[in-house]
Image (cartoon, rainbow over all chains, first blue to last red; front, top):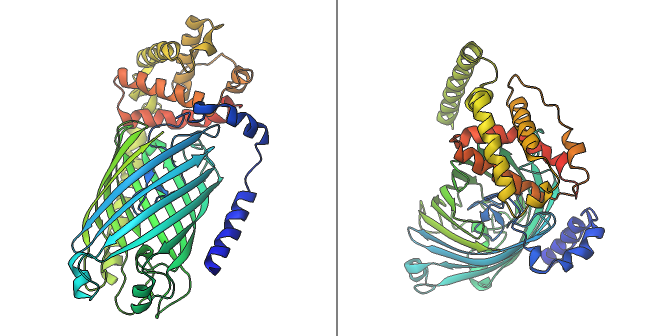
Length: 301
Length: 149
């Protein structure tokens, strides 16, 4: 509950820094369907990451999701399947980008323990579910237009995560079944090099993205974690890249490790994109080297 | 961990060796701005300007902007400007981007429509994607002067 209050305060202060475009806000509603202007350049909205925010696969980027410009709105939905050696994760969600400034996202995750659930005495196919509500606000710069400047596009955000398996989380040493991540993200397109680079610092208590709850017997406080990614653009539609994400190690029952992926993203149109990746999440309770395929489909307006 | 640093050092020394080599050889090979050459010099850029102008006039999103424009003159000015931006031996005698666009009330969607039309023109002219991006990187900051809405 305390984390929820902290999230609300942070969200309010983020929204307070929004520059007033009050003159436009009135006319914005008159646009009707024209609000979905699909005015951004292909791929510059990124894709939906595993937590539902605009980004890559594992990492969150400073780009605002969708194709709405600062005079419009973009809306998208995603489905993601991550098939690991001993587990699988599915995520569905929706996100809206408002005036290329504010991003609101929602994702629902299901983490299936498959036969490991039986080994842990939880039952075969025991599944953790998690709701994630995200808010991101662009603070500064433009990743695409500011080619004459050194600075990246900067955004700050939060993700409120709530897990439905409180009893199991407590049993493995987790301290809470809900928590809030706070992050600051910088994204820059080095256009002359056809290279998109992102770095994110995240303050989090989440164990395995929150699947195993928040805080633990080993460490209950926030730690700063890092997400980095780079993607090379081969065409307007196709990018290849890699991502690295560090994670806390709060629980004594298992050693949580860092995650990485190598991905290919294909943008069929501004309405449909697909991401295919090799992903490695390291050890997840009982099983080392959890690696596999990451497939994500996104559709939007 | 120690092994990581050895690898990192090796990678770094290799990268700096390549950079030094490129710095030594690069200027000797380049005759003027390599982008100007890679866009096909004067003829290539004239073709790109021609295709781009045609795309603008065929694009329902922005074609009305050119209702009162002398397109023959526009195409010539566009070619001159592209040439200057690419580092070629040309002179652009048109108005500044700020002056030329201040009365038009263009928004980001309009600007991006222009970018897409230019990308299509570069595709049609056979300019490789990586070269297109080197060119677009020099044009992108014009957004600050072109978009007034």
